[in-house]
Amino acid sequence: MNRTSIANRRTRLVPALLLVVMLLLPTVPALAEDNATYTIKFSGVIDVVPAAAGDPWQVAGYILTVGDVTRVRPTNETPAAGMWADVTARRLADNSLLALVVVVKPPEVRLKGPLAAKPNDGIGAWTIAGRTIWFTTESVISQRSGPVEVGQWVEAFAVEKPAGTLTSVRVRGIEAAEDAEIYGAIQSFGGAQWVLSSIPVAATTDTLILGEPESGLLAQAAAELTPAGLSARVFRVAWQEPTRRRQPIQLTGLIDALPNDSLLGLWQVAGQSVEVLPSTQIFQVKGLVQLGARVHIVGWQVADHLVATQITVLASPSGSGRQFYLHGAIEALPEQGLLGTWTIDGQQVQVTRQTRIHGQEQVHLGAPVEAAGLQFRDGVRLTTWLRVRDMSGPGPQPTVTPGGSRTPGGTPQATGTPGNGPQPTHTPQPSRTPGSGPGPTRSLASP
Image (tube, rainbow, N blue to C red):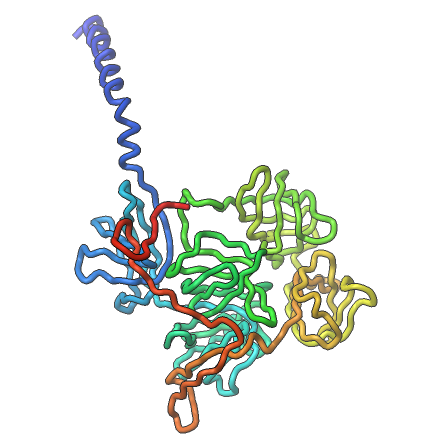
């Protein structure tokens, strides 16, 4: 075939191709809209386990259809209602959810905080972050990562069994932190209080809520320890979806400017304005917050600045130092104000304008306190946070002694103690599917 005939064939093909493209163009947007899908991730309590292959799951009230793409990763236990699941799903054009991955896991509540009390033999009621956790002969105690002793910080893994009572599965020693942490199932929520797996956590006007709370979803709370109990600085609901508000963004860079009197207010990081709120978590383990420090920030965009939810110091000009933690009575204070040298349990620490002080109105000689920060080569200890500590925790809690605990005669004893305030409640889990009939339903529309 000669070049002329090839050129003629190409000339005839071009208009034909253009015609095909023109015919297809009007249908492309419609096809894209009809098949629009995106992935969501959430964690919640399993309401219904499929009775047979192809039957739907129900997690946190959401109906999850299954298909060839669905993968289930169970634990060693047989999946059952009441267990927890991490779900990855696709929202289809009809607003239903197609399960892609369902990871079944034990319903283990996590609680991090100071250990205030425990029996000598370790069996019975422990007080962790002001809450009662029951330990049995089957509870595992690990001290590999830190001491499990009164006055130290621990992380407890527990199951809510029986309802309203936390029974320990295992506990381990951890480093002290500025906030206590709770991870559990949302049983109720409101403007004044949430209940996560029987643990009441107060909410205030300063509490930052990330995500839309719904009963049955899992959530994490970073909370202050107060004489009245746990008070949340942040609630994080375990739901990720691209269309929801306050999508997380990250920023890493050097601190160019800081507020004059405290860490609250506007920072300048890598040329961007960053707002630091009372609810912002600041981690100063690898260095102090100071000009020239390199930080990693997680937050969300508001107008012309970033609102920070977490700030982690990666490195600072003063160096990293060695982390310290101590607790005891206040033995000496500065002559005027709170800035200067404190003596706690025979040890001197420096409190600066950038020290986050919790319970400032309760500071006095003899008050129990805990402090953490960095100790540098010259021996100077700079506190990053300090808390006046009420070792007694919140008021009495209604408890039921689990069968594994020791009581005279070896018989489990149920005890009911009047509480001082609202008690944990359990919210019924309705089935939530669009148009599923009368009664409460959960909309699948993104807020």
